[in-house]
Length: 514
Image (cartoon, rainbow, N blue to C red; front, side, top):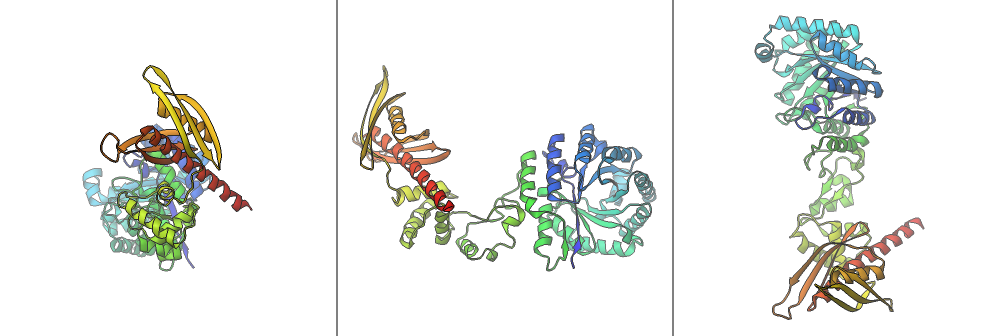
């Protein structure tokens, strides 16, 4: 039977110390509410003595967030501890988290105290905290560079004074997994009253080993993991909550432990933190990066389409992502391309897939990623599968620098002719207004370009337009020796694409409801 591992989230305290990640009170409350939905066991809300803003944020979170324990950090000073208690005393489950450094390098250069002085200070502080609060956690800062025998001595003493959580932090990310796991094994065997406390790990990622070290700690008796959403934190960051949780979930065969985390809230938590701090995760970040469930290589795409487990060790839905993403690029194959066309509503036979793949590969050589709009253009322009709803039969325009431009346009639809006129800022603008009037479209011209295809005064001109219609962008192109004619046909080309897309979407909705 698997054992429970408690998740202590320090996004709002240690994570917020990451440069550029500071949050105001309302932002901290938003994140705390999401952490409650994620069902972390402990929210470390801040360091109340650090500033009035930190105190107010911890106090507000303690008053509102009821399910998890709310922890406040304090140095081993009476003033710190009393300030922390004032901030968390109205929490449903308050916790005081007090700490002091224990490594010789910190004792000598930072604290300038002896081992016995630090031991006495730790014991006295835990005693003060325990008189105020039932939940007391003690951390030995820089534990992994401390003398293990000295750590065991301090831990035994603070447990005797009522500390019920003992944190063994790898404060500077110095340790490696085997070493860190061995430290837990040693301490749990050496500390006589270790069974009276939960041992906790808190790892930094300076050598990229924070998650690996945390899991090694769990395997060797640690039952609380301190971590942050997206792994934010001082320097290279903290152990990543989402990676630890999903590692335990995915590899339960060799890691027989479970958490109370609602994993489907992981992606939402990550996105909210990005939104609040403006600090984005790298695309290849495990679990929450935009490429974590994306596949471009043709062999991978083919495997995933046949059975997702070929290349996915967890489902995207398990972390709150709707589905995997097939990224279409130059490494993609026919199977993925055909599937993508199906999602867009186009069922192609084998011959059509081959033709589409030909145009697709030419485009993919020029672009890093091929988007849905590009695929629709392949269907519309390259393969001519889409018919023209309206055909241009006649145009006449007039304009000049001394008069208002006007245009008359005649379009044909299903054998019926439509004639309208309009004024505009120029002859092309007037023509586009007439086309909108006849077709009922409301196009917004985003880009207009003309290229000479041939040489000479009678050169063939090619017009490209980008038009936004009903919130989507459509490209249109046409060629003619008459630029006005080419401009009209290019715009009508884009309008016809929009009309076809609207009709296809409407038919698809009817079929789905039938």
